[in-house]
Amino acid sequence: MAPSFDAVLIAGPTASGKSAAALALAEALHGAVINADSVQVYREVRILSARPSDAETARVPHLLYGHVGVAERYSVGRYQSDAIKALADARVMKRLPIFVGGTGLYFAALTEGLADIPPVPAGIRQEAREKLDALGVAGLHAELARRDPKTAAQLRPSDPQRVLRAYEVFETTGRPLLHWQNETAAPVLAGLKLAKFVLELPRPVLREQIETRFRTMLAVGARTEAAALKGLDPTLPAAKLLGLRALWALEDGTMSEVEAVTAAVTATRQFAKRQETWFRHRMADWPRIAPPDISNIITNLRQNIL
Image 1 (cartoon, rainbow, N blue to C red):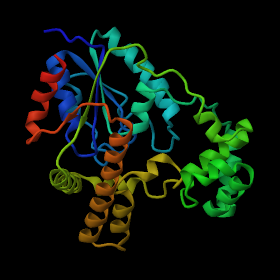
Image 2 (tube, rainbow, N blue to C red):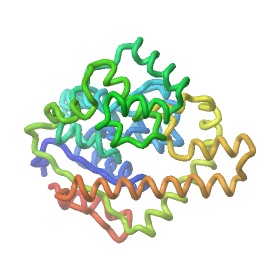
Image 3 (cartoon, rainbow, N blue to C red):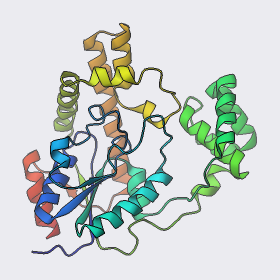
């Protein structure tokens, strides 16, 4: 039976099995899997980002995976542009677009639209970074609060990435970041008939899968990947990769393997909880798939969208 929709969107917390579900669905429905996860865009961290393997990507087309370097400041605005092209590519291949991931803002770009913020010139970016180095993140936050108090009030003074971004936008445009966030561009998937789902596993099952997956990552080379990123600029989006700092500490000898695993698993579980909060608040009308067993996800998806 041919699908009666233009695209499928599958959201879910980290380690919930969504990539496997998307792959199986793409094989069943002649689809192309399109990434909607902010860490799986980075080419150097296939293991740490749990990116699909070469064997998996050979089974059906996978788009927007591993196409960005960790030293790049990849943004949701760039994702929005990339997603438009990926959608067009899937159509050229005559394949059903299946967007899958755990990044709420990426799904917002797809279905709600986001602000079209002008790009930051290289000169301003460099100047802002030098100011961050000189003042520290708390000092730059104080400077931002003096010039853009409303945006600064919504940012943690300890978050270098977001404070730097808000400062750069104000320097570039003369307008607060909040102003731009209130100017919404058209959604990538505007006007399309969408099948939208959130994978929602029981909390104990998800917690166990998070730990199992991280231990598997360690066994297949996560330490080597992490070591290669040592010295990465902490203000870069890729520097927030889950487990990265714990593995650096393990490499430095400041954490034992037990301590590093505990730290990484705890951080990942906390992140999954934040993802679930986003899905609950921002995707309240998306149908939930809560199978008693992970193998039933594909069956549930197919029953709901055919």
